Image 1: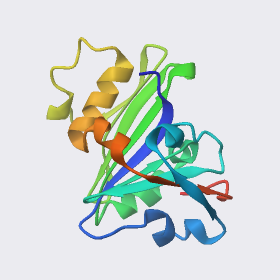
Image 2 (image 1 turned 180 degrees about the vertical axis):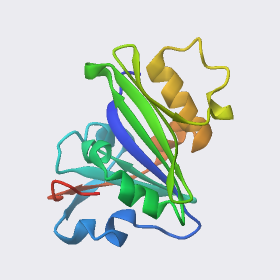
Image 3 (image 1 turned 60 degrees about the horizontal axis):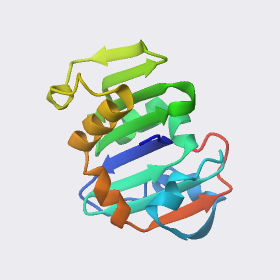
Length: 167
């Protein structure tokens, strides 16, 4: 697939606006509505694209990779969060699972070497060993969240002017 993108999936029973709840959109400007393919190309540090479907709120953008783990862990006290990190250019692929106020599982591989492997192995990781790492991580995140194909059907909103440490 060749993704160079970071994503945050937030499962919540209420209509969420994680960015607004955390005071992130205070100085941000809503630019436009975009489709999934355009949202994937949102690679500037001051931009994110967001969408919602059912109980899932999705944030795409490079700032997700630099999101403060403590803030995300705190937010996970009321919601389930899964962070996806894919950077084909740096051969870095990984995911983080936040539940009940802390990171319960993290796995990151860079250039074929495991650089993070914390928490208990998840059932969602089973049976994927034959896949190359990017596909494996995408499949794990899909099992934890929602089908990646369903993102194609969503309308995303692109924001710009985010502060450097947006999350």
